[in-house]
Image (cartoon, rainbow, N blue to C red):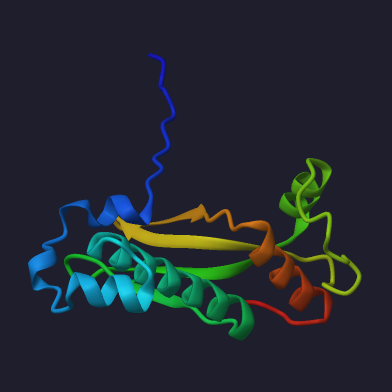
Length: 148
């Protein structure tokens, strides 16, 4: 049997496509004049995107863990995970962590991770951040900041 790997991509605007805009107690003219958006849906998407930006920046700058509540009293989290040993060696040989000074980081690379529990098992998935965030993460790591 052959499996096809599928990934999903969507924009923040897509998230708010079914959002009930009548519950947003702000007039369209205010959104347009004050925030420069011609639609309430786009305004909501911009606010959401900015919140995500602040969360990722807080995780990188303050070594924070962002905890997301899920159904049935379960949680997911986003954090920076240290990568060491053979995993670091393999990743480095394939082009990852090129901007990290391995001596300053004590031979440790750092990857942003999304983790969750399902069916009693702990799962992780890497989060790919853009170059701007990666530069900030590597700058802090090269200055001696340790993530755990």
